[in-house]
Length: 190
Image 1 (cartoon, rainbow, N blue to C red):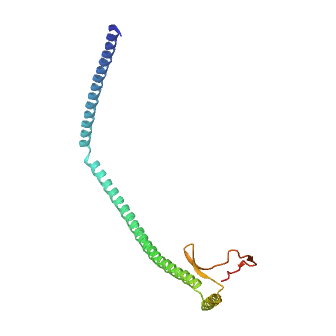
Image 2: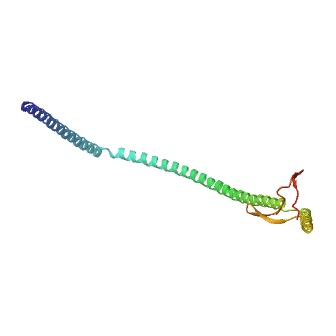
Image 3: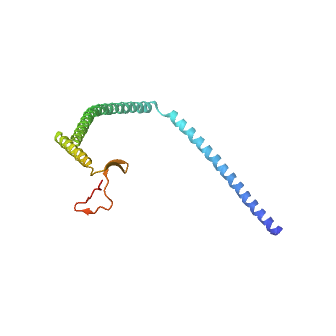
């Protein structure tokens, strides 16, 4: 950039700055005039307020007093209506609260009774009858006597075998024994 171009830019900046200062001065004068006009208007209002006749002030006060009384009466009526509505709402709330308490108690009692019935039915269904117990005991006696009879004859070699973590009775069968109808095999000869 040449020196002349630089001086041109400096002149442009100076012109902008000079214009801004003139605008600020103009705004300052306008603000000062506005302040003076406001002060004059305030003085005029004060003067008019002092010249207001006493009769007009009394009439305004009388009207204001009547309006204030009317407003106070309306507020008292509205507050009375609001108090009555609040009392009614409180009574409804207490009634609902009382009914809710009884409904909750009834629900809890019903739940306890239902659980008791389910538990009793479950116990009843799982508990064997006397006839079932007697039949199982008879079957057990028969099977034990049958095992003892087979041991006594020497046909059966019975032991306790571990089957997936549970002891079960098992018998030894001849490995070459053929299969017979119904899954039977021959016992080994002793």
